[in-house]
Length: 266
Image 1 (tube, rainbow, N blue to C red):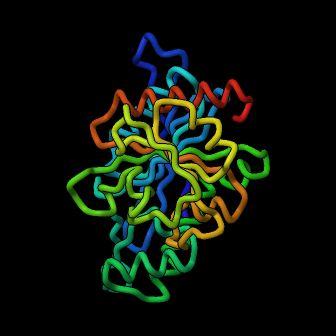
Image 2 (tube, rainbow, N blue to C red; image 1 turned 30 degrees about the horizontal axis):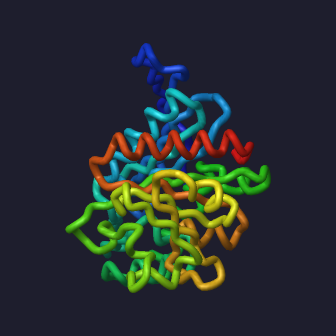
């Protein structure tokens, strides 16, 4: 399915405490090639995942965090678009890459974008499993660690991109998916944490950012990583910020790291 190639070193910032090396893994998806880039500091820290190729604010914020705090970021690169497209047996398929981590979710993701076949579903699920291998999903779970995803939303654009903490509040589109929600008046609703563990909800709720706790008993199987992680017992935290809110997302990542360090929860 793919192997690491072309290591690159990022150590141009003299103020950085850690340098970043890149390991690129090409993964074939039908006739398309997706590049999975692991940004590694070699230092202990959190494992981050950036899965949508158009969410560049999240990647920039996380790379800055790596240089100051260590850890690693796995970034998925495709065409610069949110959805992935690929050709298979002369048919074009497409899906949202954060909807492919369960069988039901992957099938729905393909059907939602148009064409579907069992062969395309098999290729999509194989891609998802290979991505999780690069992330080190099972190792994180076995070591009792957690995974942190980084996302951006775009208010006023597509519904899938424009959701915010309000989506999980009373009358919101995803109200039933949330067990608890802690809103913050002083913070834009587009910038929020989404967690699957009550302990992480408690850890973050005292800060300046909105926090949503997924209801792991009532969640919809939409194929998202939060659903898969909850089922497999791997704690999951999403750091969500509006596109362009670089300073805010950097602050959120700093706050998350500080709270985890204080609680020895990394």
